[in-house]
Image (cartoon, rainbow, N blue to C red; front, side):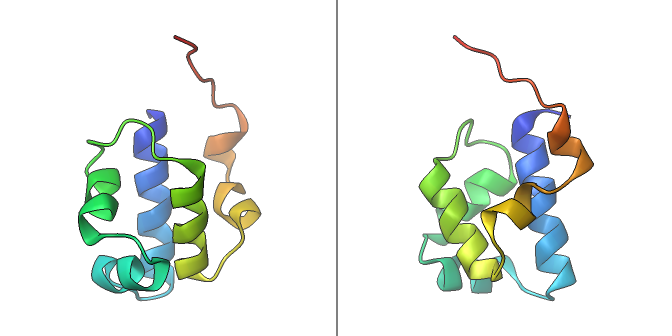
Length: 80
């Protein structure tokens, strides 16, 4: 699974767990819904760390909780 897919899967996991729509998450995160949807449909290749932090805030979790998953343990990033 690609990095972008991991991010969107993790956001989807927490939205389901907290019974939160993407609209509500975008509102609570203070990010545009279009930004969130671009992350969710993987058209955003590299969302910024501050966007991820805002999403975590909207989900009422820490960034450590967000990345605390087996899928992120062995992730390898390509340097261009």
